[in-house]
Length: 354
Ligand SMILES: [Zn+2]
Image 1: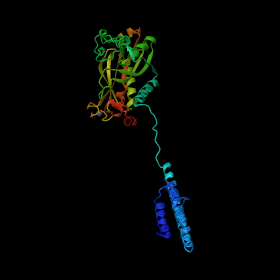
Image 2 (image 1 turned 135 degrees about the vertical axis):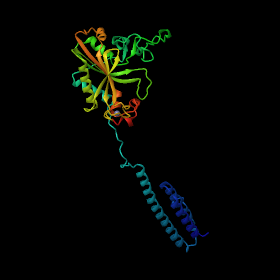
Image 3 (image 1 turned 90 degrees about the horizontal axis):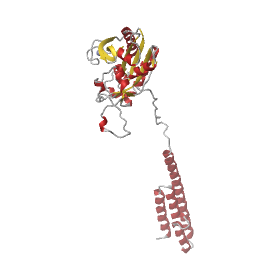
Image 4 (image 1 turned 30 degrees about the vertical axis):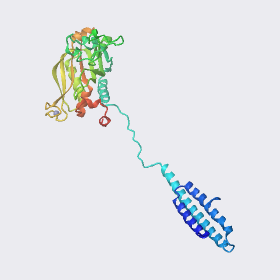
């Protein structure tokens, strides 16, 4: 092969390698391979000295052309690779400013707390004070002082959570029932308030209560109750009716009616359950009110004189009324919630509606 042929094939080989180089460092090693001090072109040109004198200028000229072509090709490829490299780095570092931001939803009160506060506010407006008591309560306050006979079914261990001190170990002989329990209603606070405060007493008592119920659409083993107590001279059933009728209209709307049905509670006599007219059918009867036109919302009555006996209030001088309502039930009635468990399951898709 003549030296000119060798130069031409070297040129073709080098141009192919330059085109194949995919990075700047690959390109640089191509340059060293062909044009470096120990590169192919240099090696070929060493043979020029052995050529006849008349051929040398021709070969010299061609070899300069080859070098110039290769250098130009490398420069061009270098520019292209540098541009691609920059573009790749720019797109890797890019911040997509069109991405929507993360929306932070504002916190809010749970529906149960909203309604409890609303009820408390209505009574504060009527001059009542807020009272609170322990959730772990003594049998005396939860049952005995509220006129429950020892055989009352609510006292059974199947209805009430009893509390035992297990720090000394579990004593099987101790039996299931103790004097300590999770209160089944907020009514024990009535007794605690009257123990330390002589009439007149006007208190509203919001709080958690516990019953051994299995959670289902209309029962929860733990729920929120609001209790009220008014004790003064000359309080009558008329005062009770007027107060609760006002509260129901505040809670459900001015156009709603109330009715009082005779009932029984151990700590009030007489006692009544209070219904509010159905807001969906306006009293004509529908699925929501089970065709009755009425929705049961609370229990109430005139304080039994026996209860006054436990707290040293003279029933000949003072009379009073008491009532209790379930906050979850009021929420369910007001917003047509079909299952009380939805209120405590923490599903934000549901809770955010309120
Ligand atoms: Zn109805």
